[in-house]
Image 1 (spheres, helix red, strand yellow):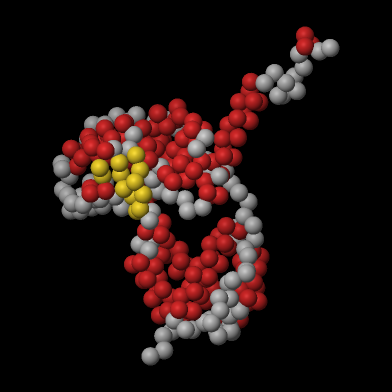
Image 2 (cartoon, rainbow, N blue to C red; image 1 turned 45 degrees about the horizontal axis):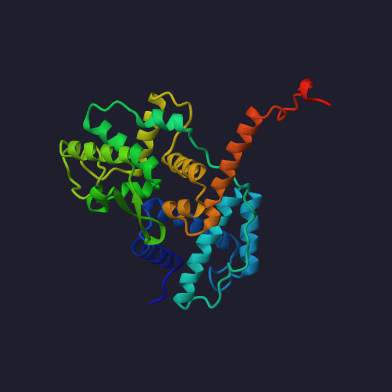
Length: 306
């Protein structure tokens, strides 16, 4: 039986979800990316694999760029196409990968936004008076304590916690696990939350963090709660879980200077990804210089002139 293009796409995405344990959000992004490729080929009358080659892929990349798509998005779409083509090679539908040697436009590196230590302190020191506020405090403390990704925090199970050793085991990208330390404040907040957790109508007994209905908490719910508390604590920024992860990495690197250690804690496979935080550290040093050095702003001190 010959499979259609869409059948192959769904088979490929199912494999990603099962083997690499990618989130539903990530799978949807892959599906959208591949739909763009399929539509481009259909519009040109190109058969998706028999007629697909380096030239067509370059035209596809150029069309995305001409439509104003950000370079980082084009990189992601080409990566999706490259992975799908590799799957088609395994299925004997392709002999070579048409996405090989095709480069996307270079993306401008944007420094991640972070909170100051004072802002972090204000954010995590929320008033707790009911189970959900205890939960939210534990979430905020754990994000900043251990630098988890949003998906990693949502997928935590009780058996991932080793509170006597103050460790948490997380499963990150590519189904890779890593053990992370839990700070003293986060440890206390998690213990307090676990006592409150039983007051909720539990339906997911394995999940560390659950909603008010007792189900495993969703990524969207956590994003909303982080924004809620940031606004309530008077932080005039649009605060996200990822910003807390960035703050964790930036503050740790600033204090320790241990880039490799930060890489391991964040779960980055390539240290070049972690090096973005060295730019943040330099940015901080440059600000200190501008604020403190007597000649940084070009102000002359007559007493010191010869």
